[in-house]
Image (cartoon, rainbow, N blue to C red):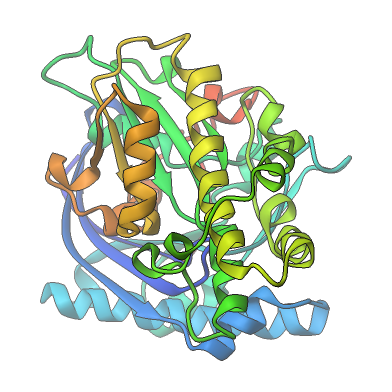
Length: 377
């Protein structure tokens, strides 16, 4: 299969920007190769972030769907311009959109998921075919619809020089997820470990009265001390005891949990931040101890990506807690970590056009492999 130029675009659980990556994709399935050509990140306005994270009704969702479609289209055109190519050179756009609700079967009697960012708007503004709604087909065959990133981790980042080597990939977005990959896709272990930045971000907005949307450089959480009793209460969250496959979102670790924390000790804002950081570290480490290490006792390393890698205090805590397994940024493999998630949707769109199933059954629990996404010409 000849090389194709594909663009992936999304806004993640942190809802901070529209990220787009233009990639050259060659081949498909086990033989696929992906090369990053260009990447852009276009920050959302504070007003848009507040509206996405705020309460919704049908009218507000309807408007946000089209507004986010415009923002994603702008990011797609920006990354094409940065790469110095023309829109007509692009094979396909893959848009994950913005997740507004994710309710797998363990959270709802009717499993469902909702991502918005109107694909028709993106197609019209760019003049390109768009593949979107990547989670829904997996859920239709009994899967959780998440995580999706294990396919990229296996296809692009497995150790091809040493097939017996096992690598772990830890994504620190709003939610943290891990993929453990080796030679064979069906041997992949992947699941959401719990919160990464989501609780920290929510608290940061309150501590700074909206001036900061995250624990920038660990500057807020490093000023406080962990509240031990509150940390133990957080670690009793029922999600953390569930065996994989499992996926999480704002339903379990969003504003409702932030509200509960804030009410527990409003006079100790920086201690709350320190406790939230410790929650992320401990939930992640316990997930490795419970589910990863018993099956994969000799990991080559853990390669981290996502916004959490830019919090040096969080990374130092994780590095100490995951030792003796090395914790490295994905960049050491020659791929900029900030472009990883957008590149995933470029790859998934390419695989959709090739007709190649791209869900990872051990990760989602789906009954069978399926082609992901819906095509908007």
